[in-house]
Every structure is written in structure tokens, then in C-alpha cells.
Length: 609
Image 1: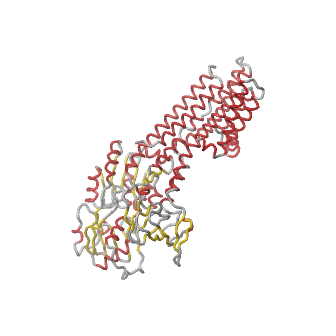
Image 2: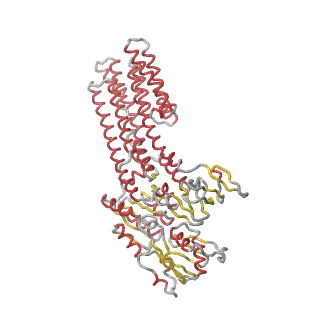
Image 3: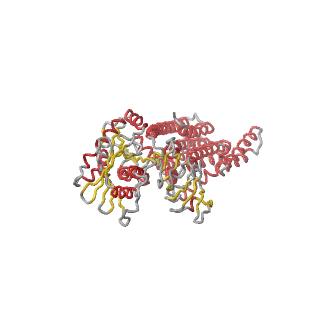
């Protein structure tokens, strides 16, 4: 904390003002006539930034704030020769402000920690074979960089050979992932195999880590509803206090108090009525919770997202890549060699796990006979199309004839892909996926907390039933299109339920955008992450439940802070009205409550086991 104060100008002003404050009290004890002037210096340094904020908000933004009340209280105390109380008031107020800034700094530190995980330079391979070091900002799509053994990948790109990559920072998986030739690897992950060449697939500003960092940064500027309410309330409340204090002074004056006595009591009222603690009730706690989530691998796009998560009644979940690893393996297939070549070529245009599995199943297939003149198009909710060839889930082939009896080859519990030309099914692939071990634990925890978890998947009924049984989900719906998923979300919303939706693919993006709280897996598509309010960086559903629990803890702490801060204000005003409170005690109790509220919010920075 002391280092923090030394590293910024506002902190240094607080330290200088504190020195003058202590010197003023020492001179006052010795009876020196210089003490008032030293207290004035303390008031200048301790109140400089509060006065600046008061003037800026009042003049430029046409808004009143608590800084204005504090400055007026300190100046009023000085007018009636209570310079020491005025300086003490500003000291505690400035200390509370510094503590709040420190809390915000703790939250922004999460961004710095994320940024530190990605190199800022790369070894660029030039056309003549030379390797030069360049900034990752200079890399463009298509550049080749050299990644040494044990080095971090500086940018997202395609590997030129089979490699072993540690993705723990991104997915939470401790076991290194094998990347096949031309498979995409991500910035921030670590090469645990031999050196390889990486062909840049995204600019440095578009990588998964860059998107994560940007979302954490933006989150701090998206307040929760209660924070917005307190901000709106602050200006009106300050105006009320400014009008009430002169009335209070006048009432006391006409009740035979001297003007000095009435003014003194008015300054006490001005001090203790200030909503400093109330204003600090939500923001530090919310930023602490966001920082906690970021350290735990869950990113919230602002306090409103965390607030909505705590109200979630039903959680709709995608299957592939969410409840399961999405690490498919082809276990059976049937198609002509030429058809397989076309399918492998087409699947290279998709980032879906099923597409990658089909590509990986045929590593030695030759694609030189493939017609590359026709474009490959992604058909949302169905699959891929290239000319008259369609590759996708069986539901997309309902109107196709089946001359080779491919439909009979589908095995219950497996994911199937059909290949069709014109209106005939000409091939199939059966694939198997594995359920994430942590999925069952997380779903059980959600159900215990009263959240209904429902599986929504585009896969077939048998696969959906198998996965639902394994993870403990009672309700599931299969063979769904993206439009079907939206329908389920909207039907629940029509019943007055707060809906969460978790997924990782392009087909999940519409449902994620429609749900009150969209949750994307960090290894999923960019569109899914953009459409959501929460991103699970490390693909672990237990972390989502931890965040759900954290959101409830945040609500409890904010409620505690609001009740405590309002209670202190009411108690101090009552004590002042009956004449049992002097200015020094009013300053200590009022500003002390602000510090306690901020410290209570900072408790959320501590990781709960």
C-alpha cells in the first residue's frame, strides 16, 4: 500500500498532507501559534484532489458529489477555528479514497497478469531464411514465426508439424495437447515439443488472449444496477444535504444558540450526512469480485453480469465442448475415397470440434484431386455446403433419399455426420466424445442451489440421452437448430425466469445473446465470446459454479455495506440533533465507516477454498 501511495501523485499528496497534519498536532500540543497555518497546509494537500473532483463534477458535469460536502465541511470548520478537525476530516476522507483506488488497482492487476502471459515479441522467419525479432503488433496473417522448444507462442497460428502444446493457461488442462499439422494453436500457450514454424492466423489484437484482456478491461466500466442507482442517488442526496444544513443552522440560531454554536453543529451535520460509505458500498466490492473471477479463469463483462448471474433460475447448456471435451474421434465411417477427400477439404473451413476430428482421422489423405473452384459455405445449424455436396448432422438430411442405407449405420450414443450429394445420402461418419469429469460435479452443485440445468444440443436424441445420464441432467432436448435454442430461452423468459445459456459454438451465439446471462467457453468461437456476458477461460464448469456462489457473496456484502452505511449516517445525525456528538468524533465515526465498507468489499479478493 505504501509503495502504491509513492507511485502516484494523489498518494504523494496524501503523504505530504499527513506529515503536515502530524506536525500541526505537535505544534498545537506545545501551544505554538503556528499550528493553524500548518493545519491549513495539511488541508491544502489532503483536500486538493477532493476539491478538484468537486469543481469538475459541479461545473463541467453539472453534478454534485460527496467531495463537495467534504470540502465545505473542512472549510466551514476552519472558519470557526476548528482547523485541526477540518484537516483530520480530509485526512480520513483522502485515506478512504486512496484505499478505494487501491482496490480498483487490485482489479486492474488482473489485466496485467493476463497480459504478462503473452509474449510481446516474436521470431519472424523471413523469405531468405533469416530470423529477426519483431513486435507481435507488426505480424500480419500469413507471416511465419519460429517457436523454440519451451517458448510461449506469441500469437495464434497454424503449426507446420505435429507438436505438443501446454494449454493450461487457456483451458486449465494440465495434460499437454497434441496439435496436428495445420491445426491452430494459441498465443500464451507453451511449446513442450521440438521447435516448429507457426503461420499467423490472427492479428495480435484478435487473439483469444487479446479478447480476454479487452473484456476484463471493459468490465470495469460496466457498473451493476445497484451501482448505477447509488450514482444517481448521490447527486440528489448531496443537494438535499446542502439545503438542509442552512435550515438546521437557522433553527438552532433562533433557539437561542450563538451563531458559532449553531454553525459548529451545522458543520457536524454536513460531515456526518455525507454518503461516503454508501457511495463506496458497491463499486470496490464489485471490482474485487471481477478481479477474483479473472484470477479464477472466469471473466465478467461488468458488474451487471455478475448481478444477473446471482438471479439465474435456469441454465441451458450446450453439449459439445461444454459438458464434453469436444475432442471427437471417428469410430466408424463409410464413403468413397473421392467423397472423403471432398469432406476433409470442406471441414478445413470449419473450427468445429467434429470438423477437426474428421480431418485428424485422415492425416495422409491426398487433396490434389479436389475441386477448389467452388466455395465452401457454412449453413447455420446444419453443416457445410460445397456446390451440390452437403456435410452435416442427420437432421439436415430429412428429405434426402438413402440408397445405401446409411441411416441404419447410426449407432445410439454416438454423434453422426452424413454426406449428401444433391438429394441422396452417400456417406456417414460416427464419432465419439467424452464427458468432462467436472461437469457432473458442477451440475449437481447448481441443482442443489435451486438452478434447473437443461441440455440443449443439435446432436441426436441417443447422444443427448447418454450425456444427460452421465452428468445428471434430468431434462434435455436434442436435434435442435440455433432457432430452436432461442425458442427454449424465450419460453423460459416468458414464464418470468432469469435464463442463463452456456455454449461455445457459432450456433450457440444467438441463444447466448438472447439469454439474460450468456456464458461462453474460452476455447469456443469468437462470436460466442462476443455474444456472452461471461467467459470461462479455463473450460471447467466448476469455475462457473464458483462464480455463481461468488455473485451471491457479492450481493450479501453490498447489502451489508448499504445497511451499515445508512445506519451509521442515521445514528450520527440523531446524535448531532440531540447534541451528543462533537466534530472530531463525527469525523472519526463517519469516515471510519467508509474505510470499513471498503475493507469489507476487499474481502472478495481472497480466494475461497
